[in-house]
Structures are given as C-alpha cells and as structure tokens.
Image 1 (tube, rainbow, N blue to C red):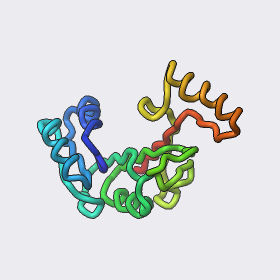
Image 2: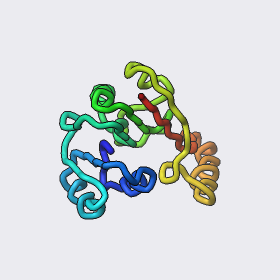
Image 3: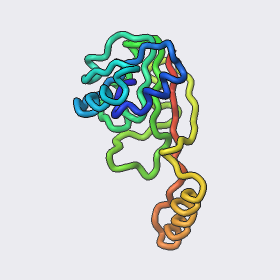
Image 4: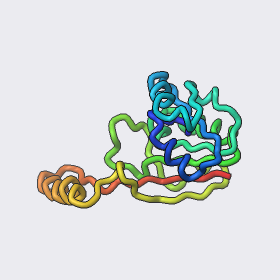
Length: 162
C-alpha cells in the first residue's frame, strides 16, 4: 500500500488476502509509527518515498497521486516495481479539493501502457442517504439560485496495470 497513511486499508487487505505478506509505505514517519502500533502484527511498514519502493508483486496506490505534481513519474516508477499496479484517484473531480493538483479521466494514465479501469462511488468520498439530500441536492438548489457552481456526487476511478 503505497501512501498508506494511517494504514486503515491494511485490515481490509488482510481480510481479503489472508496469506499475503503486506507492506505499507508512507513519507510520514508519524503515520508509519501509528501504523506499526495499530497494525504491526499483520503488516510491515516503511517510511520512504517512491525511490525506496522495493520490487513486489502488487502495489495499491489509493488517493495519493492527486496530491503530487510529479504524479506520472511516481506512477511510472510504481509500475516498474510491481507485476500489478492499481491506482485509485478522484474521477473528473469538480470542484477540486484545495489540496488536489491533478484531475483524472479515463485517459490520464495512457502513457503507462495497457490497463483497464473501473469508475465507482465510494463511501467516505461521496454523500449517501440523508447526507446526499442535504449536502448535495438541497444545497445545489441554493447554489443554483445564487448562481454558484453546483456540486455533484464524487466519483473515483481505479486503473489496473498488469
């Protein structure tokens, strides 16, 4: 898990791949220390950037690249370090979150070679149920009246390179 943050995905990976040796990597020493405390019994954690990524079978890079100006270079390096690479990023994000510097569509990683992709909504990224009605639909009526940009359900795209 490249850019693992606080390691919240690690238990999910372990549940789906119980026999896998899991590795989480992040540039934040604080995040890695927290990962070791919380999930050190089920995974190994390393502090480092893309240059320290070891050769592995499979890399997941979820919600990282949209923050990086050198996102294509990082993705190219990750692709070279794995047999399979999955990248998840916001899809056609509008309006963009302030800390995001890249916008993605179906062709964003064409330069990395053959791949497939899937577009989906994700809990934690989009509103659901009552929150969807309040935060999106109701507020969009107000935005429309005030001639402000409308907000839509947030989508993600996952690219898979093999």
